[in-house]
Amino acid sequence: MTTEPQTILITGVTRRVGAHLAGHLLEAGHRVVGTYRHETDALHGLMERGLIALPLDLLERDRLTGFAQQLAMRVERLDLIVHNASIWHGDEDCVADPSLAMAMYTVHVTSPIELTEALQRTLPAPARDNGQASRQVVFLTDAHIDEGEPQHIHYIASKAAIEGSIRSLALRYAPHTRVNAIAPGLLMFHPSDDADYRRQRLARRLLPFEPGPEVVAQTIDYLMACPLINQAVIRLDTGRRWGN
Ligand SMILES: NC(=O)c1ccc[n+]([C@@H]2O[C@H](COP(=O)([O-])OP(=O)(O)OC[C@H]3O[C@@H](n4cnc5c(N)ncnc54)[C@H](OP(=O)(O)O)[C@@H]3O)[C@@H](O)[C@H]2O)c1
Image (cartoon, rainbow, N blue to C red; front, side, top):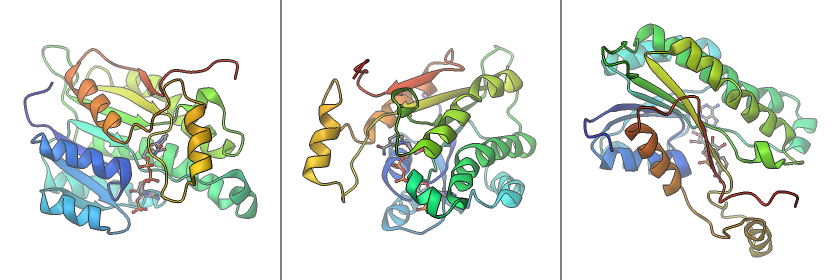
């Protein structure tokens, strides 16, 4: 476990995984900056606990440099960037409104890459004498890239695109920054998911339980603690039932 307090940026902390992760890292004594589009009770609760909240809409690519400059006025270093923000449109929605497919590529691929670049320009990660990286970038992708998801082809394709970029980004940024991905399967159901759907989803897993967002926090702790991990994709999917 890293003992020194870190400065961490997490995109999309208004609910669920992002909100839980921000709370976990604040609890551990780190300085956490979280982005939001819509204010929520969860966001306000995190701000009361010390979260630095900054508005950011990843669909507005022309504002990413401005965001990086705004962040550089609030913090003097950046040790970890977690690209968590996401949208999850099904393929039927993308047929009805073709702009939604491009929006997923913008939020999951183009803007996170451009934001990472803008942050490197405004808050450069220094190279260290001991050869270890001074910054880490983590992308939240999706275990269904391997399993397949026939109703969410655009969503999965966009997550696969960013997962496929981590090797190139790590090559560009070495030795000052390492780049990894966490690819969860089911973490938590939506309140609207009915009992039948929950039973079917759990039955497809080798370990049939709903893990909750804590497993992402545990994996971030591990990635922060172990300086050797680079260009890795950590799958959080309870193992796979190949052939089914
Ligand atoms: N939950 C799961 O079971 C699961 C499974 C596999 C992978 N994942 C991945 O894990 C991550 C977190 O999942 P989650 O379920 O917590 O997601 P979520 O509930 O959909 O929350 C996504 C966050 O992204 C933000 N966001 C959406 N559009 C944005 C935009 N244009 N610009 C900036 N922020 C935006 C949202 O903020 P606003 O509400 O303010 O827009 C929200 O805070 C995602 O990357 C997801 O793909 C989750």
